[in-house]
Image 1 (tube, each protein chain N blue to C red):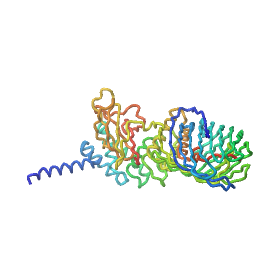
Image 2 (cartoon, each protein chain N blue to C red):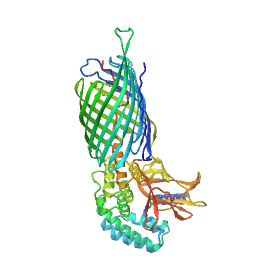
Image 3 (cartoon, chains in turn purple, yellow):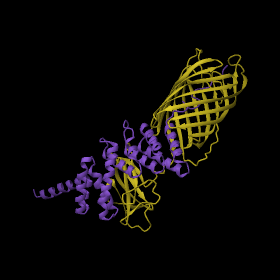
Image 4 (cartoon, one colour):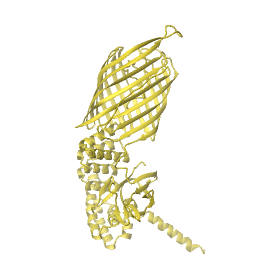
Length: 214
Length: 382
């Protein structure tokens, strides 16, 4: 029984470390942000909850600002603006959009993608944050939104992995930097995406032995 | 007896596009039925070879391959060797139009039933129009070659050699349309050859999923020997450095070498990539690399060249709830390994407590305060 206090301490320490591992953005905001800022953020989160805006990205945005040494009085206005984009993102992507998708939608809106373009993403294939990131990168690079959407649709239709989508976007931007008009650049990369898996010649040369006509 | 195959194609590109280079070793088996109307037993082969290709984003590139075949039975084939070298030069003209040139050199030789060799070269201009998922490609082709066959008047006697000049002039057109994952199309071609007129017309259906593809084709071929329905199924399924390629159907005639239509053939090859070098994606060649996949995402090594004289560098992002994680000086930069959930994340660095992002960061997004954050992606299938 003499060891009981130590055991208790170990249990508390383990519980504390577990809690740290599962710390949420709200927990960390409560721990690190000034109390007035945290309270204002909490009120803001409560006021937009009814619109389907989760609180985690709001607190995370404030933490981002604090980490970047943004003056305290500029944190909440920025988060409020961000909440507005999250609301637009929710309206465009629908109630079934999860938090990462919602956040990616808000990022895309900030980078110049119209809410209507988010709405036009096909829903019969999994919509990923990467699809929205690529859409935003293409639009930001000057690709017309309809062409950017076509490319993202192609990639989604082929169930392209995240890395492959990002590669495709990077190639479009590379071509644009080389002087290819954005519209042509995206068409080239779409063609590449389309043809990537084409079977081509059935078998290596020789597998169908040529026989003389004699 | 030697089999000779060669193909050559010079390639260059108007655009300094980056290229994809692959070298694949393949082994497998194939079977080829006798020509239509021939009662001979099907020939079976064990096959093995090497394929290499180097293609740029524009579509320009070279491809080469050789294949050995060892007869495993049947009366219509013997050990063979073939090789080819071919390529394309493509120039994008804008507005969906592209033009170019295809060239191919090929050689072939087989021991039985008669020792036969062929060496040929062909090529011609190509015109392509692409709009969305619609594409039309028209190509003209001209080729020349020479074949040699040894025939015996009596088995075991002294053979007599016969040489034939081979040539063909013709053209093909292919139209494809549909969605990104399913496309259908039509193709037609006509060729004047040493042996007469060859013409063909038919349809294709192509299914694409990721890097895998299945193509079903059916063509009616009219050759000097008659009219045949030719076609079959081809597929290629790449999987983590391995690939499976196959064909099942009736093999096409070749207007240049005058190969007759096959009565039914199939083949399956297992490939192992021994080199695969893709174009460096500017958006991903940044400050991180995936070390290993984990249950939630991946363990990621993040590296940055910090400003000179920086005494302390930390990495932070939404995956750390923007809590700084100390980096370690290593190999002239700063490194840290962090577990990151699958998805796209924003992140950056603190150099001596100040927000820092390298100027050449290839993929960055603006924040609400006029700064930029880098993007880190952990593939959902890492």
